[in-house]
Image (cartoon, rainbow, N blue to C red; front, side, top):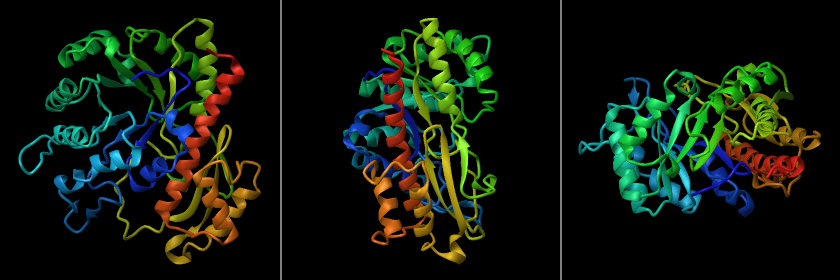
Length: 372
């Protein structure tokens, strides 16, 4: 696997709304994307469930992981992807004693998935061993997901070298993802200068098979959005464009753009019996997100989405019904010929549009900037 800075690496939190968004991408977008798929943490998302009476996951780790590999094959059609199991607790084991990371990659292999395992400098030894065995069997290399804290420490070269030695691969057969998480991007121009300095000091920068920078400025909670409609700056995209211009001047390797879609990187454990989530459409615009909200869906149901969709269509941000599967769903819902769906549906709609939009943004940016 190999790609350059004109590609896109979104981090996908493999929930139903997100893998349906991936499944409904256009052929052009699919060719331009290599997703970083995170195995969902047991007990943290609605599809898995949590027993709040006894404060434990409602399903076993075996039941939780059983459908994962088949869904990757079905929804991503055997395309290349990164898979990271970092959200699984290190102490967890399958019923037969197998390490869950090894189980995940064994099942992905049996499904014929073109997977590159992901690990980090801070993973426990047992997880690293499971990754090493998967890398040895699959012979596709592996991906190092480097946190910003790791990149700024005094000895990243020694720690990275030790990991590569343990896995048994040269840097040329490995991918590098520099993960910013959700930092404070302000001021963006100052942060761009800081990131340029950090990137230029990364060990063996030009030798890695691929190099990606991911991060997000998406709010942690929609409660932070006080009025509707609202716009929120896509600071990670603004940072990226500024950073590319700076790196070009010094002939430094250009990173691939990556983000967390329309999500915040971490997921809170929520008792959904007590929560009344609001209706919302998270719509990605040129340098911002356009957020349209309504009252809670438990008391006010989902018919309100027809008006929310019309608000999106009437805004200057709407890309048109032909732009993506998600955009057509918005148009059909507004016209009353499509269903109003549920919260998972609107996650799919927003994420599908976002992925298509970012692919177009990257193509337009590098086409207009003349970057090779």
